[in-house]
Structure formats: C-alpha cells, structure tokens
Image (cartoon, rainbow, N blue to C red; front, side):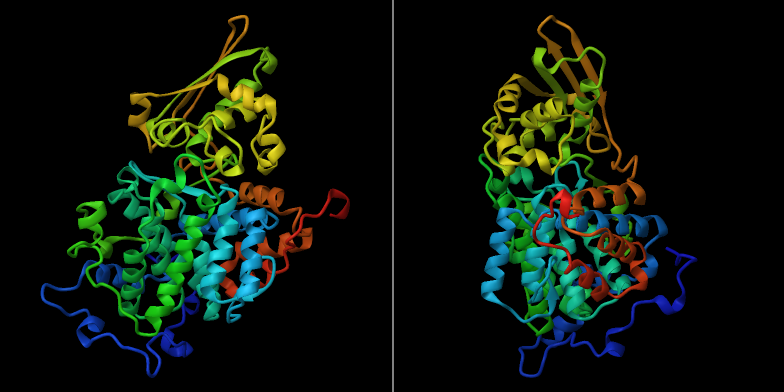
Amino acid sequence: MAASAHRSPSAVAVSTASLGTPAVAVSGAPSASPEALDGSRPGGPTEVQELAAYVHSATFEQIGDEALEQLRIRILDTLGVAIAALDAEPIRAVRELLEDLGGAPRATLIGGGRTSPDRAAFYNSALSRYLDFMDSYLAAGETNHPSDNLGAVLAAAESVDASGQELLTALAVAYQIHTRLSDVAPVRAKGFDHTTQGAYAAAAAAAKAMRLPAEQIAHAIAIAGTANNALRVTRTGSLSHWKGLAYPQVAKEGTFAALLAGRGITGPEEVFEGNKGFKDSIAGDFTIDWSSEGLDAVRRTIIKKHNAEIHSQSALDAAQDIRAQDGFAIEAVRSIRLRTFDAAHSIIGGGEEGDKRTVRTKEEADHSLPWMLAVVLLDGELTPAQYHHERIVADDVQDLMRAVEIVSDDAFSARFPDLMPADLEVTLADGTVFRSAQDSYEGFHTDPLSWEGARAKFDLLTTPFATEELREEIAGIVRDLEHHCVRELTGALARASTSRATPAER
C-alpha cells in the first residue's frame, strides 16, 4: 500500500537501534538458541515466526487514510467508554488492589497513578471493557472486540516512550491479527472464549509497541497463545464480573509475555501447527498468509450505538422505531416477538448459551436480549443509566421482558455477519401490531461512525469525569495522534476524575 500523501518521510517510526531501547535480552538473562533467534530450521520458519515477521515489518506508512481515521475514532470511542467506567464498583476494587500491590511506575492508569505495564494493561482494559460499549468484529463463527487491545498497546507504548505513530501501528497490528484469526479459527462452538485469539493479538501488539525484534515478537506471541486458552463459560449462564475482566487478563498476560520475551524468555516455536498446538488441540486446520496481510482490518469492525451486547444493536434500533410510531402504547403491550439471526439468539436470546430471563446484575442485563428490548421499549434508550441496579430489577422491565419471544431465522442467519437482520413485532392488547425490520445501524461497517459522531458519544460518556477543557485536550491529541507522543495522551488521561461530578459541579 502506498504511503499517504499527507505523511512526511520524517514521520516514519524511529528504529529500535537509534532509540537505544532495550529490545534484546539483558546481560545474564537466558537467551534463545541461535536457531530459534534467526528463524532457520528444517522446513523453514514456523507459523508464529511468519506472523512475527509480519508484525515486525508493519509500518505506519502502510496504514491507509480511511483505516487511520477509523483507528483514531476507535481510540476516542474506547477512551470515552473507559473514562465513563471510572466509578464502577468492580473497577474500584481492581484499582484498590493495584494500589496495594504497587509496581514499577512505568505506565499510567486512566484516572491517575502509575504501575507496571502489565498491571496498567489490565486496569485500563478493564475500564474500556466494563460498560460493554466498545467496538466489535463479526466473523461467521466468532465475535470479538479488537479495541480490547488498546490497554495493552497503550501501556507497552508508554513504557518505552513511544510515538503516536508507533501506538497507531501496533494497534492496527492487533486489529489485523484479532480479526483474521477469528475469521479462520473460531473457537466459540468448541467451548472456548473469544479472548483465545486475542492472546495472540495482545502479545503481538505489545511486543510491536515495545520495539522488540522479530524473534522476540515470535516468543511473546507463542508464550501468550500457549498460556491463555479461556473457557466460554465466562459468557454463559449467570454472568459474573469476569465477563468484563476476561480480556483485561489477556491484555495483562500479553504485555507480560512481551516483557518476558524482551528478557530472552522463549516460547513454543510451533504454537500453531505443533503436536498438541492450537490447531491440533482447539482450532483445527487453517491457513493465513501473513505476508499478504495489510493493516486495514479496523475498517471491517463496528462501533456500538446502544450500550448493549453487539448482536442486539439492530434489534434495539427496531425497538426505538416501534416506540416512536403513532399509536404505540407501552402499557398496552401484550406480546413482543423478535426474529433474528442465530448468533443473537444463541448468545443473548436464550439459545444455546442459556436462559436470559434471570437478570439481577449489570453483567446479566447487557447480555439479555429480552431485558434490553424491554428497557428500550420502556425508556427509549439504553445507556449506562439503565444499568443502575434499581432500573435492572424494576418491576416494569422485569415484567415486560417475560412477554418477549425470540426465534432464530435461517434466512437471517445466512445474511450474517454481512448484516444483522432483526424483525420485531409488538402486539397490543387490542390486537394492533407494530413492526420494524432493521439490518444495520449507524456505526456498522456499512455506515461507519464519523469523527463527529464519535466525539458526541465521547462527550456524553465522559462529561461526569472530565472538564470541557480536558475533553478538548484528549480529543485533540487523539485527532492528531501521529504527531504526538504517547505520554502526552496518558498524561491527559491521568487527569480524569475517578469520581462522578454532579451536574451542579460540572
């Protein structure tokens, strides 16, 4: 891909050698064998070495203009969602733990404080994941959230005083690896969580941000991929806090794997194709020619319009449409029937991953399509405000969700993931039927969110935690991130308040 016209040659990421960054094993640390380090072995490089070569060779200039714009939008969106979670109870517990543990102050926590890069990756990823309001990628057999990798990239990049260009390049790498592995190696049907593919993406991106050489990138990926094969029970049945902390765990471990590899620790060189490796044990056979991959996968990802699990978005648009139709009366609703695609039915609609009508917590609510449809029909929106405990358990929404029937439609399933078809019918007590059919929404890859749309969402979410001046500063840095250093961004993020201001205090 040709370099974009607006980028000068001097904007290219600086080489490791010129920066003097310690990207190789320190004196006295174990070293990889010469064979492992130079990639020479009978039959050529292993698959993880080929992936590492792709990661190492990726440059900022390879990111096209549209992809670069969408990366900036994803960063702003992810940071907004993170800041909005600063006062969440589980986040406070994690922060208190990190304060007790301490850690070398090499990376910044959003909301202030510094700790080790791996712990910062966990905390900042927990922030961006908790509200379940971040971006997503839809593959035929898998769904993931590539923005979950920002916490690892941010911490790793700051720890080596990286540039904004380096952060953007590492994040683009994470998006490419995470989405492509989900395309060809889905694991949900086999009982494993989507964080499984993320382990490879987080480690690769952290290692890239740390400027490790190719051989150490390979070891970081191999370590993280071998050690982080998570169970899908995280998202089935009664949901716990771990739903929002499973990927932060992977971000932490991917960052730590990169730190280990930078000290000469090696990982299984046949993590993908080896005896009892990822293919043999979990994924089955697949092929990716990493040498032909670009850095544009972010353009195929989507951003949430509603604060809800991704497969619900078009159905919730339909609920808003019905609520706005003339003659609709919520108090007269007799039944609610949704036809949708199989993934929505299976994951959040009461299908194979369990009944979704026992809703007591935020984690259960944002993965219950019956509850979400009910609350949107009642309130007209689904934002963080709907997830206050008193709203979750209120009689009106609890009663209405029991009138919801959700069925999977084969024709709709055939159109997924290119579209997200939803056909909603609401019948009143007198027999009047209201109907709305939707198959995409603003923020879907067919209707990408603009910078202005992302900024509106950012301001809505962050206003209780950041002054107008600070919001302008953060957004301004992200808008022109390639011309800033990462520490400028993390310095601004540190000034967000960890407690919510009242309207009178803003």
